[in-house]
Length: 416
Image (cartoon, rainbow, N blue to C red; front, side, top):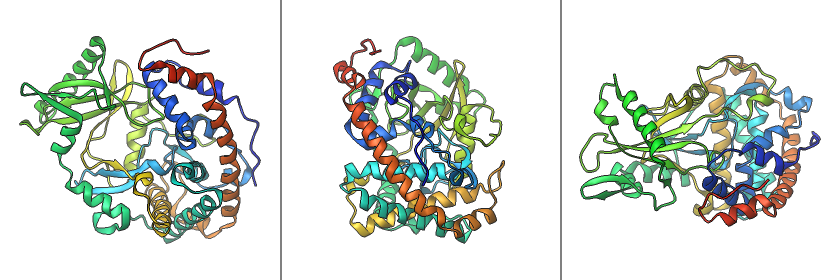
């Protein structure tokens, strides 16, 4: 089994990594991280990759295109550019080329951390991790990438896809916007958005005007309102906007655009593999997402705003995460979901096998036939989760969290 390396001071690393973020949203991020071990795990992907053991058996694993932050809540639904809704891996902000163990261990350690919220302990997490690896290996051995959409899904995933197929644009607008004297505006009372300073708002409006020029339907992008978007956990506090645009027109024809800043993968500096050159960090995210998902996502574009790299995409009524903490699947159903997540991970890797230095399909099939690394991986995940759990306890009692709870929505001075 790989031995954990000497670890940096987590509190100092967390403070340094999050320096310069929006204070109110950073306080929210810290509160979410303190609330549960899984929340802390989600908010510290940079620490996870910094603590990578680097053992020879891990580095010998085949190079694949990685999600970079694989965990339970980075699987969900989206509408492809063919207009079908899929259940797949999502959120490729940390995507890169590297050993497959980077994604596998991230997911497996995350299962231990999620057990606190889902009501199971280390023994059950170990069993689920073996199930995840069995699904992953079986899919690789087949050597053929498949997909999950409404006609091929069952159980809680099938139910989610059916529900989202019925969700309309009007439903999305009703949750995120309000009508005032016949004019639609973004809501800032739901915890999903904050008002922007006028100068920042003006920069986004000016960008959208330039973006619309030369488009087949420039009127679609006419801005009705702009706000700071509150979403996710790891990226909370970074520049992120939700833009309400005219869309198709009419009372329920408006559309919502997500503009998410891309500051670079926390994983790339830790990898030995040479990375391809992308035009920007947003271009890296968009390219990897298009490669790894079953179908390219609708309306995903890399852009620049005031010199910063952003991904632009339309928010969809059919996009959602599978929330296991609220669905409470039975034991057999949870086993099935975790096995499918292993298969989805393998299928994503198979889709871009051989691309820009990634292992070939034959190489991945050969790797999967040898199960010697599985036992080591399950044991390492359990030990690693124990170390992260202790880090979470220390974080929860730290001055960073005391500061976060004291904010109450105001931007006070950060602790040293």
